[in-house]
Image (cartoon, rainbow, N blue to C red):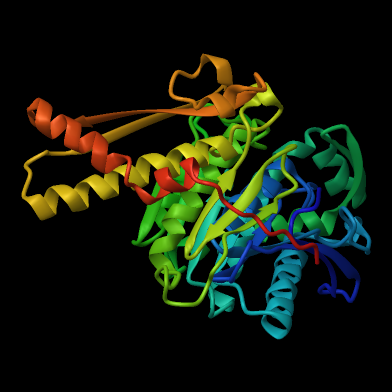
Length: 408
């Protein structure tokens, strides 16, 4: 399965070609964002994919790219440093500006968080910034070098083992890292800032989030990622972070046009590429996921197709009853409708006509339970059932629908 993604390439700060992916929403684009990965990571980190998918569900296109010398990007990693990463990020923003639309949001993970804080003021179109597990000092990354740091300072360069991979680090990287002031950048950001950090982060301690938060000016927000690790390796943690970012960002973006403000006669459903069954759904200005439960091989990230049918029946029933109650001035209080779906043998269905059960096959059965807050008489109770049966979705499910299919 393929998510709605374009593979892109653009020139980085040194002229080296940088590999990128641009994840598009299933429908109109509300805004563009750039996700900046952690030190020595890549654009294809699981957390980056999950966050891009969630933001795409909210109508936000996300550009993920590899810094010079990493992932699918060209160039020599040993010649890079934090300043070159910032320059690559500016190149990415300029590419979006020229070919699509300038980014409204910057998201930075770990050292990428420091990078977005450093560069946000230089991208005037950016409306908001989010960091995940970001250090309050670029020099924090040097702690990962261990005893190799002295070798770098003494010899000018040394190989460093980072997460099981060897990287050649030169002295200029160390000097450049020590020269940057993340807290100064946070203090002069002048843009809304969301800080996400895990209290148990063993790579970048939670005190870094506190330092950034205290340095930054309002509007600023902090959200704890609870028991997540630094790389958000648990998909549930990445999904939580993504949902928080998407919800928070909504305050700083122009809202989608209300349902009906633009012509859209169909619901659009498209595979995301995450899991086996996950699909993004757009119905007018509304976006959500459809999926299957884990027991059926899905991610359980959204209602199943039959859940959607049950939702439609329950919602239509509630709305129909509300119209009737208001018209007749019936004080029903709050209406609640519960619907369950099952497959049963037609011969077990007492309500089925003989012609429907003759083959002994299975049929769909929806069981609906309606609750109201107020006490009602038997007469009103019978009327509620009668009106519920007139709900348009009820009639559609009990009737015979014609489905015309075309393949483009």
